[in-house]
Image (tube, rainbow, N blue to C red; front, side):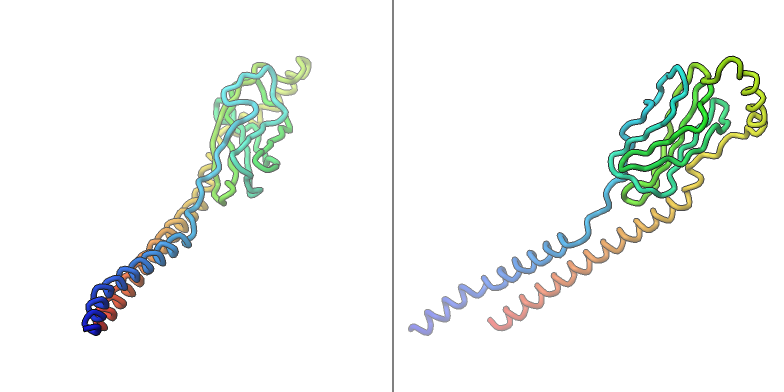
Length: 214
């Protein structure tokens, strides 16, 4: 009689084992997924400029400051200034201090509306770029020097062919980095699928072994 009771009790408690194993395997799968590397962060963004975008100044600024959302890398930063006709007025390598890039003008900007193109490398290693504009109302030179400045500006005007966009210089680098990102995303997906298959196979094997013993 006692043996029959023991057998019936064992039969009732046997199904609890596969359930416990399933819960354990699920916990292992969750831990494996959490251990995978986190996706790459978004690129840094430009927070502000000094002078501000669209600002109108009485005379040319001495510096142009760009402030970003995080510390940027000191890798090939560039600031290019063109006038309304697309003639390049200056190409400056700015200094980098944390999230701020400072372009110091060697020569004051003439009167007119100017476009400032910038390019830096984000803290995640990707190049980012953009443009903004400012207007200078007066030339910084003295009236007596006006004739000399006009003569000096004539050779530059003859070379006006329009500056090439900065984006063309970094297009190849961005394409290579984007292809690397796609390869990284594919390998992560493959790893998740492999882990899921391994866990499901282990659960199935344990379930059949326990059922066969019962």
